[in-house]
Length: 179
Image 1: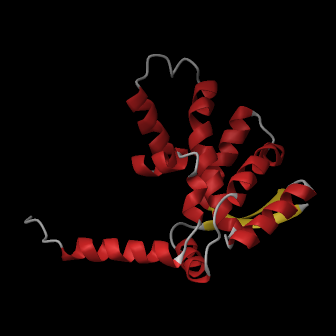
Image 2: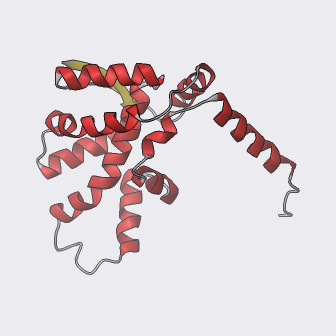
């Protein structure tokens, strides 16, 4: 079954380059990995209406997106759509998070495979810098993408929004440091 998604352009391009470098068939690879990710999303609480509205607003911010068609197994595509609907999670937001996770997890092995000699003797710090420069990402973004529970950030509720607002209010009341 073909599904169409809108995802962030830069991570999508990077993921395709990784697949090309590793000689992986994109849709076949995704079909193999998606069931475990869907299982994880099923265990999440659902976003409430206010949280889902906030998530849609967040998804509209940021970098340029691109429209992509994926060929998935019928059962996988239907189950993903069903679970995203039940959990009030945007399928596009799910794929953005999943793509970022895959980019971060697969980029280092892809770099080694592309040029095994270059990686010899490199420090972990140098490798991480190269990964951040390719992904155009900060260290915290990479660390959050490496979190095995990265999909938790897809769930938004009124309670989570209220906690965030309270934190920002607390921060804004603190005295500012002198320049």
